Structures are given as structure tokens and as C-alpha cells.
Image (tube, rainbow, N blue to C red; front, side, top):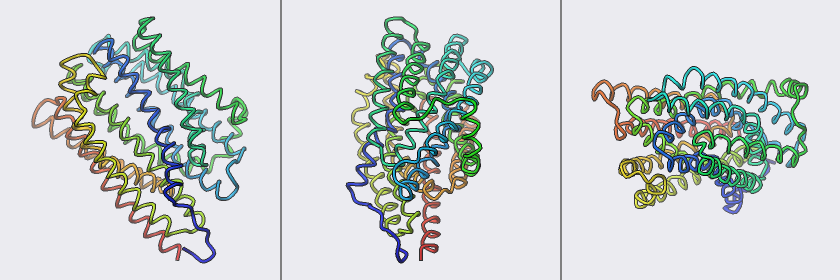
Length: 442
């Protein structure tokens, strides 16, 4: 540590105080999709396929444009060290900027529902249901993006418990609404989307009032975009391109599955949703890594950064092995919880094993992403994600050319190669960044 530099609190208690609430705040959005799938899965396989296609299209638009929250977490952590826990103008400007981005996202999603989804669905009925899902979710985007902005602020500035409570309340509201819309009113996929729409707007309006953030207006949004121009310019383009490669891998593989039948589409989309629900839990380690290393960089505390890097990576691997083993042991029960379809259950048992195997490299890649974001090296995030995507694309090409058909089993080979490549590439980037930090901190 450089002479005169402050030391950062890296105690186990601090990590837990950031990580456990973060576990809730990163898993709960994934549980949104998993509960949607569970509810719609009890209605019918064709609706489940439509939901999977609709959710993948939403993710394809949402994830790249919401990726700026990576930078917001690091920024909020540094502001906490510099100025305390709150910077009102920064909070308002960030929220307004996210709402501005949401308008573009909503437009792209409507275009996707009109022009893209019908050509990717295995049947016309599935395509129509998936498109309707996209139109309704597009209406919810301003609220969804505002929530994401404020959650990133909370996680970066130490308000992780509040973030978790807010998202849990939103999830429960969404769940209750979906039960009514899907089972009682029999609106199926449209009912699932309406539940999300109402829950997100209710949560966003409460958060804006709680944080004293005025309702965004065209004038306030334009002013915020001008003030945030430099910050957005440095972070947004690399993060968007990074997320595009990430979503191309996740959504692209679902689109491939859709061309080989509704059953393959349903099983793969469920498996990917399960992977997201379990894998995103490793952000409970990535968020403490990002927050603490961002603070350490601000004050020049090299030793704390090194300890956090090593310990959280090892912890991620250990937790992944444990969760994977439990998932394999309970695979039959998990499959029965998701769907009553016996044929689908048999396929899901295999899918759960594949997901379990993927968890260790998932843990390494997620923690590494948090560390890389703490160093503001967003270009490196783009490069590692692009490299892993091309590995997946090449492996899909080889399988289709040699086997002639992608099944619910073979589709997981490119997925596993993808996540393994991400893990290795990201880990080596963190080693390079730590060496660079060592040279500048001396």
C-alpha cells in the first residue's frame, strides 16, 4: 500500500454485508423469469416455448442497453469513499440517463416483436404469443430501467439490504398478479407480461419518491444526458458491445433450439433460465469484489485488492461445486417443480446436470467480470465476451455440419465451451490488471 493511503475494510463481515443482500438483488430478477416459466409451464408446452422466445428477445435488447449499471456500481463505490454515501445530482442524472436509454430499448423491442420473432418461432401461434409478450414488456421498460439504475446505486453505495427488499417486494407483487392473470383470467403469456408491467411501474414510482428523484421529463433528461456525456461515452459503447456478444450467445442458442422443435426449445430455454437463476447468484461475490476493489483503487490499497481477488475467486469455485452437486441430487424434484409433463421432466433431468457442470466456470467468470469492472477496463470485458461467443458459434457450426441436427443434449456442448472460454479469458485479464495496479501503487 502506498505511503499515506487509507486501508479498505476487507473483513469477512464486510464481504457478507455486501454479498448476502447482493445475492438477493441479483437472483431476484432471474427469479422473475423462473417463476414466469414455472407458472406458464403449467399451462402448456407451446406457451412455455413462446415465453422462452419472448424472454430471449427481451434479454437481447435489455441486457446490452442496461449494461451501464456495471459502471454505475464502481462509480457509486468511489463516490462513497470521496464524498459519503449520497450524491443527489449524480443519482438524478444517472436515473434520467437510464430512462432515456429505455426509450430506445422499447422501440427496438417493438421492432423485434414485429419483424424478428415471427420468423424464429416454430409455429405461428408461438410466434404471435411471443410477439405480444414483447409489446407489453416494451411498455414497462422506462420503469424497469429506472429500477436498474437505482439498484446499481444502492449496491455500489452500501445499500444492498434495501436493494434486496425492494426487489423481493416487486417479485412477490409480480407473482401474485401473474397467478391471477394466467390461472384465473387465462391470459397465458400475455398475463405473464402484464404482471411484470404492473409490478415494475409500482416499484419504480415508489423508488423515485423514496430517493427524492423527480419524475423524468424531456427537459430534465436532456440536461442529465449533457452532464453525463463523458461518463456514458467512456463506459456505454464497450459495455453495449460486450453485452451484445453475451446476449448473442444466450439468445442465439435459444433461436437455434427453436429451429429443432418446440420440445428442444422449451427444454433449452428452461435450462438457460435455471442457469441464470443459479449463475447470477455469483454476483453476490462479484459485487463485493467490484465495490471493494473500486474503493481500494481510489485510495491505493493494493494489498486489500489482491486479497479480495484471490479469496472471492476461490470461494466462488467452492460454492459452485456445492450447488452443482445439490442440483444433480435434486434434479428430479426440480424438474417436477417446473412442469408436470413427463416427457419434459425426463429431458430436464439431463439439462440440470449440464447446468450443474457449468457452475464452476460460471463462478470464475462472474467474479472476474466484477474485478475487471472495478478497474474500469470495459474494453477487456468486451474482448473476453466476444472470444467466448466465437467459440460457441464455431462449435455450433461444427455440430450442425457433422451431426446434422441439434438436440436437447448436443446443444449444451457449445454452451459449456462458451462458459469455459469466458472463465479462462477473464481470469487472465484480472491477473494482468493486478500486475498493472502493483506497478502504479508502488
